[in-house]
Length: 451
Image (cartoon, rainbow, N blue to C red; front, side, top):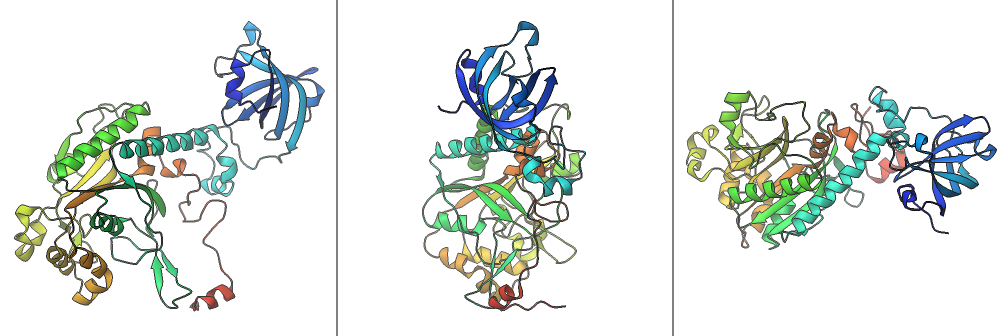
């Protein structure tokens, strides 16, 4: 006998079905016992006698029964199975559950986050998080469909790469085979996707895992996912038009409402003057569930920071505005860039730019940022050399996938749309990393810890 999913029971009235799932609730009314059974597709009411009395919340069971129409007065309009119930003929308990350490039936937002993440495999059973991860999967599928339909190729780039200054701290991985040397986990696939343009693929994308050792916030994790895109032989406006088209297609197919089309395009200076920052909310009613996107363009190429004279406003690979190239020698702070950001409902959800493909301009930017010729060769020599073998003009963007999902679902934190996030102290869910490793492991890597 094949398994029937709970959502399919509505089409099997007076038929025998085999169900599997978790016990959602048990209600005893004299000799009759009602059990709500839950699987990945929904909830259905079971009806039986003494054989159901010993069941507890979250027990895993196997049930054979007959699907029956409910009495008109007993219909539950809140359930897709609210017009039927299953009369139990045979029951098997596959696994008993202890009393749960956390409530999993409400929103969970009032529970201490550290406790929720310690028991994340239970926390994920709650309907809100089940919904969130299913929506996340659906949106990822829609992005893939949209790019593949536009002749993009999905390519996976390495997770073990080289430490290069890109704006945040790297996570470092020691090498056992080359003692004293380290890999870095990628802050983004930036240099690899530019190398893919040199390789002639012209249209690349991936849902890329990125890792940055930076301070944690509601919209920032050590690990996060980008919808990463790069295109050859393209202008800024062509990229903005294409990405706008994809974003509209994805979210409208998923049933979300976009407030303004086409997306407004606002200069960085205008945004600062009008909104006080370059992330703003254009919804007419901030309490509505609409998505209000806008482009921010014409950023400064550089900004001044507390720790260094000049830093890239975006990244060191963004092309200066062609009209401002002469400013690099005398007044680099006045130079504009070909950077663009996508904002939605008050959050930055994407950033990109037209890339530098002239090795001389790229070296000049690195020099302005304070890198010596030796550092440039050491950190970026591979990229500059690649540009000497026929590099096409190219540009791209990285969309913050976790942020987009959280905003669309009305969640306050991206941790609510990631299966196993780190908490605000940087501890991983369930596994409680970082943790100590054995002296033998350290010795094998040639590492000795300071006191």
